[in-house]
Length: 334
Image (tube, rainbow, N blue to C red):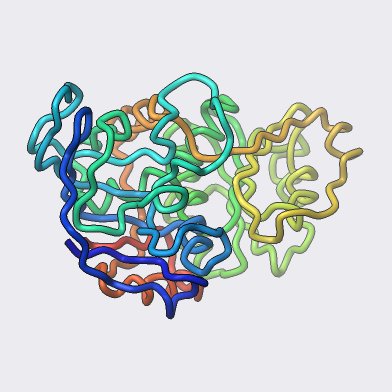
């Protein structure tokens, strides 16, 4: 089979396509012919060497495909089933048991940048009905991160205000989920063209944060001085102050990204003055994913796919991601 391989010390020039022996399904495992994957910031960090991993690691946390063989004792799936990977293969339900990425595909373990993957039946869910493999492959990391922040760590409901940042996969899924829940959305971006696309997806108010540096205050004003109920925070320390300014008293911030850095000054007095809550979000459990899939089917939500690349052009796909010219998810056809 063909696989993508991250070679030391990382970097797109060291992302190779190799031939490796086909895996087989052991006891409790299924063998999946991978049809599609999708790019996340986490994957990018792995392939450029920002997240250390073993030499020769197969990247990509997200994978959708078809079961082509089952090992002894498999009861969850059968040959021909369409399946979707989970980000944390060992986190099935309940509270997260152990932080870290030792078992995460494409990080501590080989991922879905391969034509075939053999893994535990417990590490997969079904795909949404009516979804293509490309569409399903966008859900594992980005969609589930938005879902958990808004509906597990918070309980966004009709009439609530949700603030999203930018036009990456998590933010667009957050917009789609919020509108499906009957919430109102304030969307930010530095691009007027991208803001118009967010408006077409249902955003109620738009803020160009380049033109409006104090966009948190502006968002607060747009709610009539009440403040937003939920912020999907992708920037980290560089944007946290504005997010705190935007929330209502008792509001919630889902901290899911560190695009502005891994540490920095946070206005803690403003946070406790708002009685706000910040939840660190690293994707979710298999049960969360199953709930999200049910909601997607009930509401007819479809992901926004920007571009697709074949597996042997994976370096080009990541270069395109780094250029930030995309709107929505970038997928790999495998």
